[in-house]
Length: 238
Ligand code: URA
Image (cartoon, rainbow, N blue to C red; front, side):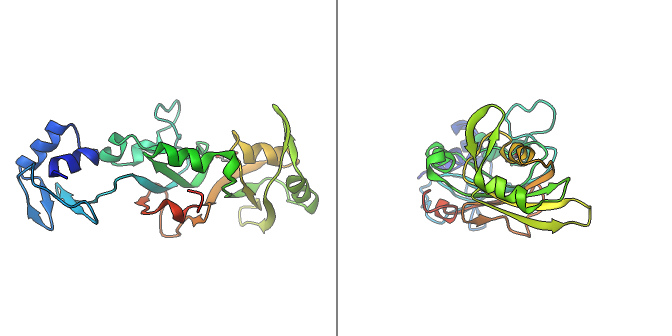
């Protein structure tokens, strides 16, 4: 692939802007400035530099973020900054989308991709991809509540009961809130908060710790993100 085409595909601007970036000496390959936009490069394992920043080539973008609280999963946020603002401009320009959404006040594992088919596969209710949520609840989480969540609760606008694939009380935290780990295989609007409310409790804080086989790494701080190389690390169904 021509170097200018590589930059264009990775979100560095229009074709003309990418050619300009290269011709004006802002792009490196293996540490050497390359100012010919039309040089052929092998994209397999390619890492290039733009204005001193290192960029691994990805035919498709797949990003894991630790979503901080106070951010909306929307391109046009209404009340809070957007999670998209936490990504660098080339990724925004590639038109990555979140794979499902988290509420503004929910933290934790959030995925982005520019692969529409992957979004469909990972969010389809038919695939049953499990998501694990750590809820901090106002009231103690008793056995009866856990059993109700496992058996299925009815949400206000939906007559079909929804059940948790797993529900475990995880004990009282230092903040006096009561832990509940819920595993869901669907992604209905405010599902955890509404299920917990239907079971007679209230979610005060919510964090997603896992999506499919992928667990949020401890070292990824709030607002930080990293590339994922293989969607199969999320789910074999992907
Ligand atoms: N369920 C919720 O209630 N909120 C989220 O952000 C995710 C799941």
